[in-house]
Image (cartoon, rainbow over all chains, first blue to last red):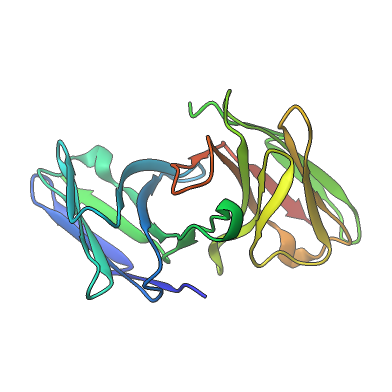
Length: 115
Length: 113
């Protein structure tokens, strides 16, 4: 089955700097790659996603890149702000028989923005 | 607010007991997913239902079962509870299934004593 590895597990950056989180996946059939942000005790919230027919997607300060050949994808946050502090999860999924979809999550990255 | 609701918010019970967690998907969403989040296992997919039918299974224990009703709400039943079942249980929903965005509910925190 699919396996998703996420690095680093913790990341500390100065406010205003950029943060990059990387994930690799094992199953070349995976075709959907969302990123979720989770604050302590709260629900995961989708911040951006990318599908396998696209190499890059941007939404204001957040961007995601996908390299299907190398089977890795990355989250880039620019001009970081204190409210960006949270745990970030990458995930991968593929559509199976009759639309079955299993999201396999990475282990998470705890991002801390230092003022 | 994602539009997905879950009840109860918190549940405290004893080992060996049985509990039911409830989820109502966003209006119009046909697919419901259940996830377990624990400190040592991270976010784990349990099971998916689409329009009342089971579509995908993850690492769901035999002691756990789920169903989706005609009004599309879903219930996750956990029986013969063990200490290790203590976790946050999330429900998510999406409109269809094909690479659709999943929106998560607020979760139910289960504590087994």
